[in-house]
Length: 110
Image (cartoon, rainbow, N blue to C red):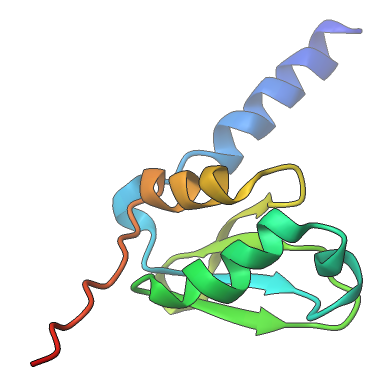
């Protein structure tokens, strides 16, 4: 691989991950409701059961779309897009926590 190509790749990686956690304002999970999600039971459980419990996170169902976490900054500018297909449920939750998202505490019922 040429020196310029390596330099370009390093620069691209640096630029694409140059945001800070404080730049993340919200996120969304884009995924189909069935097809690929049905083949990923761990991710499906995360999307259907865990994701709705997080602050600043919405789930958007788009036909034929593989599951991805989309991190958003100011004015809903896309900062990063991360595939979820290769993760299990616990790893999906850990990814959100590492990106600064927290589950909304359940209100106590009297």
